[in-house]
Amino acid sequence: MYGWLFRHLPGPLWFRILLSAVLIAAAVLALMEYVFPWLAETSFLPSLTDSTIGGS
Image (cartoon, rainbow, N blue to C red; front, side, top):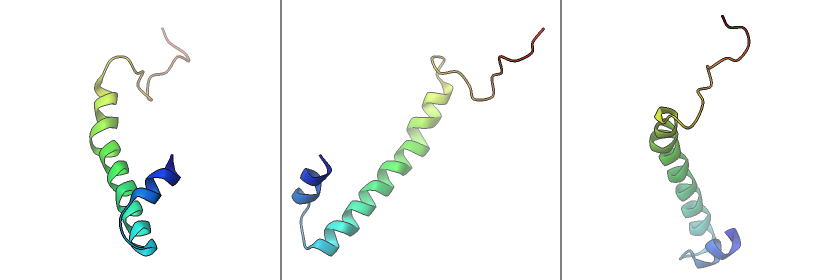
């Protein structure tokens, strides 16, 4: 899959590498800014701070 994407990017090799890095950075930024906070607010995922040890 990644090879297919890389072959279909325009330009010379150095530009494809740069464009790939920019696309990866954009995907990581979108996940960190929008997707993960939205997932944390939904009720179908347990919070990382919820504890099952101890209790009353």
